[in-house]
Length: 274
Ligand SMILES: Nc1ncnc2c1ncn2[C@@H]1O[C@H](COP(=O)(O)OP(=O)(O)O)[C@@H](O)[C@H]1O
Ligand SMILES: Nc1ccn([C@H]2C[C@H](O)[C@@H](COP(=O)(O)O)O2)c(=O)n1
Image 1 (cartoon, rainbow, N blue to C red):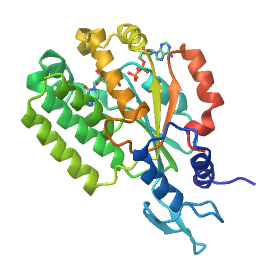
Image 2 (cartoon, protein in one colour):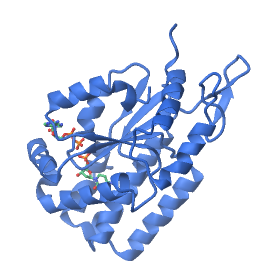
Image 3 (cartoon, rainbow, N blue to C red):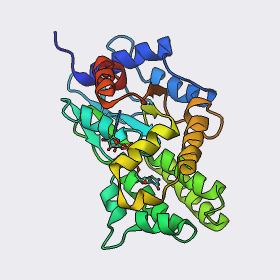
């Protein structure tokens, strides 16, 4: 019998919580409890709880909000390639990072400006990144599963944090972005169900960055990729810096593209929360 993807997502998700195949930290426990309490043990379909719900016509309330998977990782770690791999999957919507918008907003290039002068333009870029990320998080979904590249969380906990910690963002700019971020997270639905972290060495990213040759990124030194890498590791692996909004699946992404694609195919179920 064919089981709808959303229902299968519920079943596998519930199994995964029990088997705990993730790097889980104390901060994820409340999220897991909320997911677990939203699962109906008899029909394995998501009901109410943390999710918005509606009637499925059979008297049961089914989850309306899709499962959200965020693919995280350093610059040029292979996130877009990962999304490309899954882009033809039925019942899955894929949202790449809107880098084109960051490079051209009404004729301006905030990404380029930020790399030229981060002290001056860091706030400008990150305000816009936050808006575009919020837009993707809150986009109504027509599929049961939605996959997006990065998230509003990594924008704040990795990139804004890096600018601030490296002394390239004035305290007042950091305070304003923090106020915005906290308001958004409190007043809108930016919930995430699974984080897929593509773990790479900074050296691997540096090679891929050079190969990709994005004009604005020519100025990026290896040290910058180390800083981003360390922030990611503290957040998602050690789980010592900021709250982790969802369970984390860590994938070694240092391997060549063919091998990565093979890995994605073989682990399709766990990556897509099926
Ligand atoms: N596993 C891999 N092995 C070798 N090259 C890769 C791999 N994954 C991606 N690339 C290449 O590295 C560059 C950056 O990859 P991309 O998917 O755009 O990374 P991201 O979206 O994380 O910035 C691209 O040129 C891409 O073709
Ligand atoms: N909050 C963010 C998010 C991304 N960037 C930069 C980093 C890269 O130069 C570019 C796109 O990232 P990629 O998808 O290639 O990892 O945008 C940023 O500065 N702030």
